Length: 120
Image 1 (cartoon, rainbow, N blue to C red):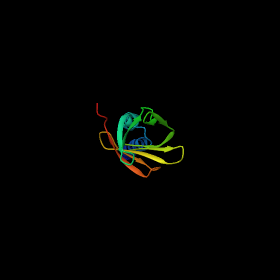
Image 2: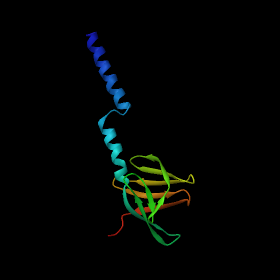
Image 3: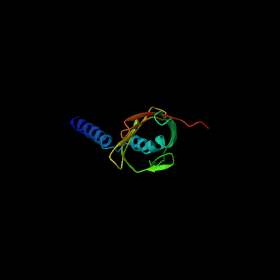
Image 4: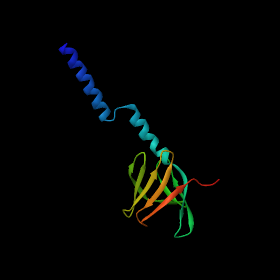
């Protein structure tokens, strides 16, 4: 009986460690799908300039606005945030809901914009 308890404890310990260390299948599959979730062509309206801008995020997380590449580094990506740092050290944050990106927060301009799907 003692041997059986030790085996159960060992199996539970190994299972717990493997999930903690990210050795489970679901975590790696989910992480690789995040760039695809954010990828696409979006729009946002800038009321100060009275202009609609085109925002593009590629599957490899390159960022461009109005067809101009923005030099950035990805700081964080998760289910609800994609955070870039631009070459000046400002954050550009893309917030998402369960379906798609919905907000762009630009620290350089201290502005928050609503992201929409472009009209066809």
